[in-house]
Length: 611
Image: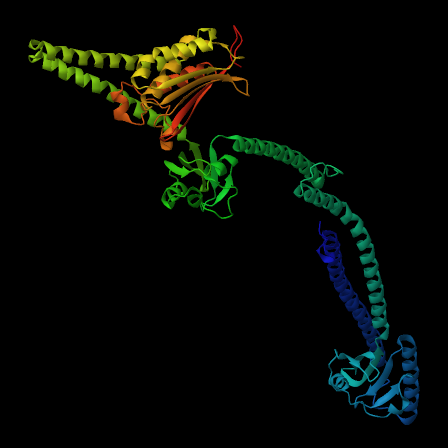
């Protein structure tokens, strides 16, 4: 968690806010209080001074001390009286007082004023206004010493006539000094209040910020994936309710993430072990998720970042673009596998990924390996075509010869006998074909049960040679039979193995030139299996046909095989019989050198089954 800056802390902000509010409130109160106090003090000072001035003016108006019709002795007495009066006034108010006659000349002056001014004329504007009868003459002045004074001039009226004036200059130091003292007290009180408020603000803000800091720490822990911590709940107020709600949210979030992780693991396991390949893209068609099966099917070890789905699949961009527009589609994809020579066929199903209120957010491509299905479908088509062809050929021959007989060939015995012989031969061929198909059908449906018996291998192989002795003599083919002494008998289905050996020996005779040789051997190999091998010196089988030689109706030389009476099902039947015994059959061949067919059978004890 990053450290919060000093002035970014909510605690400091709360304290500063409270201090500013208190400071503003105190200042507003102080301005109002001081302004009111100042006005009150100045008004009280002015009123007091006016009252004393009015008292002095009234006394002078009634005492006739400023009358003009006085003799010399009377004037001396008057000046003495005025000086005593002004001195007494000076003692009372501490102001400078001047008594002026009707011409503005100073008659008496207080002790605090310069005595040299006596007899001089006061030319002040206020004096002139007072001598003109204006009663309200006052002003504030500031002298060279920055001393503020109140100046009042009032006329002295006696019997309706202005006989003089009173001029008073009173220092205002006392009220202003009082205001300064009040200001100092107010500032001290303000600073003390701010200090106490700051201390209380720290304490009170801590009760708010401490839970918030705890919430911040818990939020950081949740963001880092730690859900075991809890926010302490200190009360039932709003912050306490917030802390309780946050703890509940943490529990719910932990449960939700656990469920999400579990579902994610399940999905990952499902994707990893699916037999189908899965690729997911974003809204731009770039691959973001792929499973192991998809990489194997497409031949990639890892997909590069930013690879588009069309590049990964090797297809055009149009189907992907349609899917990203919300259209589902399906297509077949042919790929050449790196470890197989034949093509692999995939069915690709493209489905858009839709999000609520956001439209299409990507696409999913599901790859299904339909190679075997396509092979089976191709084999089915070929099987139907081969069966149809194999049946149509003899039926066509039978029909044509029967029509020939019906058209008059019956009247010619030699020709009729030959036609009947052909019809009989083709009918027997059809019977063999149908019989072979029934054999294969029983093997496919697993209804063909083996009848095992203890069989002498030498006797079985000799009987096979005896059954083909006529054909062997016709082609002057020599046959050798060799059986390993320690493996003289085997527990197997004698009729089934006889059919297998008859088919293999018959093919060896058919494709071995006159004067060739065939070797038949039986022994137990190193894996503990019975190996019966038929080796000839025939024309061999081309390599391109080796992988398909056991397919049904498959012939290397179709015309020659059909002329020799083969149905193309012999090797398929032989393989199914060997498989029913729990064994396998392999074929090795080289053109113009010969062929070796090996039948591997498990050695089974009497009454047992192959492992």
